[in-house]
Image 1: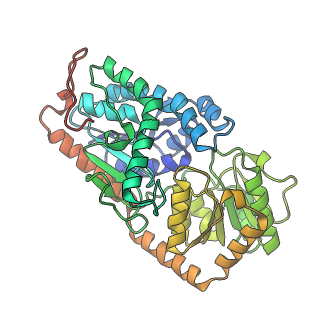
Image 2 (image 1 turned 90 degrees about the horizontal axis):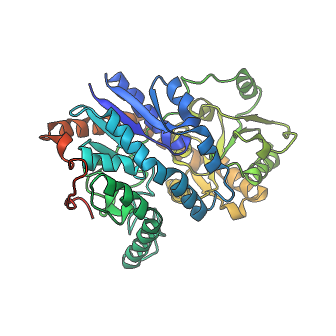
Image 3 (image 1 turned 90 degrees about the vertical axis):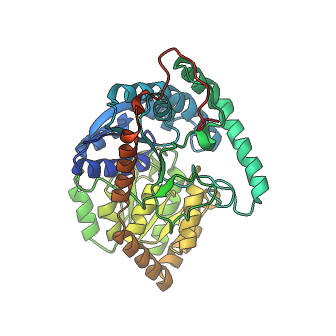
Length: 436
């Protein structure tokens, strides 16, 4: 029996796939713990999994409510100062405490630097998990840079990104490494943050074809779908609303996006223009028009696996968890990307023929209404959405992800003295071949 430590301290869309994977691993007889933050603690426990806290709910709230958090530069600075850097030693100590040589494996995102350091110093097998393509950057794929950028220029720009990140993170990460007797690293988000054991992309190859300049140990599992359908009760009010009329448009944005009033006002106005009912999903009721327009219902949360098959369309921000559940439900999507992975996710959906992209700066009721009308009256879109939903139904992204984690654990356990590959406390080592 393995002890699997799954680490996710991002949004619900980042952590939900880990819950799905954790539940499947538990069904296979393994011990599973999910290390996350306080806002998702009850959701992890409701799924029947052990919870380890890395960040409390108040700390997460301070991040999500920070002014300007929707801007990439502000978001990265705040996350670096309040999550990535302080969580590095905390996560390392957590893995150190739970590690049992020969049966422990960790699966964590690339920014979980403490897990990467634990792999290096303690020999703990590690799977680096990427829920979207942004962190599997490529000079040709367009996930981080526009596709039109020539590869030589793309390489130079990516080098600049590395330098920008290192200026904000490397000194403090390396200070912690020095205390463990480890040599400094640079270009943290180039190759170093990818585990040499395996890199796991939680999406299918038809959504994002593998690229030659991805880490060679990369595996794609398919979408690891989870929405708490069997762990959270659906309110009677939601059932009554869905049963009372035509399938509605579901309008939702990132769970951390408190400053979303304009998005909801314009999206709901677009539904009103088309005579469509709508369900608004947000934990921030102050973002909605008051009173709610006729034919609109609001819920802080509903399981999308239950809701979306009963909807006619989905309007959202482009998060991977939301779009994957939309694809699985076979509904057309209008996407208004915020930042980070959202623009790339939206572009891929558009190329698949099931979505229209409306930039935030142009997100107005008339434009959104036209996009929805296009999607809802197109036989081609309907057919394409159905084909993709059938394809997802035949895949087992969760099971494939579990296979990768189990294989890494077995290979790690088979390595001689895997738990003693790091230096003795207080000693110094030269960089290993895997380090920059």
